Length: 206
Image 1 (cartoon, rainbow, N blue to C red):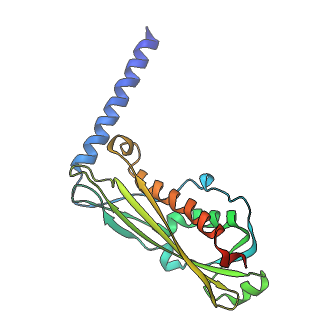
Image 2 (image 1 turned 180 degrees about the vertical axis):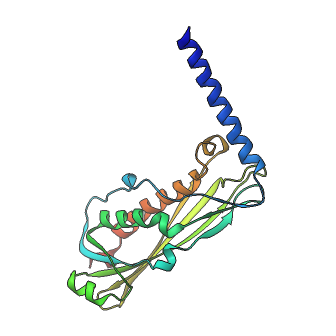
Image 3 (image 1 turned 90 degrees about the horizontal axis):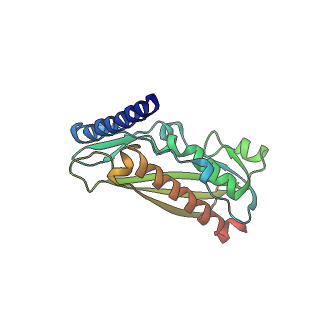
């Protein structure tokens, strides 16, 4: 009897939580809601063969602190820290492709480039878009992430540049439990494509 009562109570609580979440999605309007783009780094894929080079990458402190605001649904917006949310995933993607990865203090950190024996330096730039096809809920149903990498050699000469675009979508029934879902899916897709594009670059293997 108690087991049946506890199960029923648990079900009621879940329904009540869902109702509160749905109400929050509808009623809180006219502001920028914080979300996260952070992907699951364990899901970043590995290519069949690494590039036998050691690389450095640089993301400035200004970029790591940069907050971006883009559209959500119902006339609202969402805000997030793209570089901070994505840095660990970007590092993991580089680590999957190259034999070694070093974070640099500056884009022209010649001391580290020489001491670490780096062959390439990568400067990633992120751009994002979001929107929603809902007039009543604020989380974005569609999200995109572009990762543009400018790659130079140890002397600073450009080797190549490439852009990998990730797309993520989430429906109302999905994002009631995770308002950031479309952004996270876009980040995950962008990192998978970054691994693919870096691995496929003939210029990086020369």
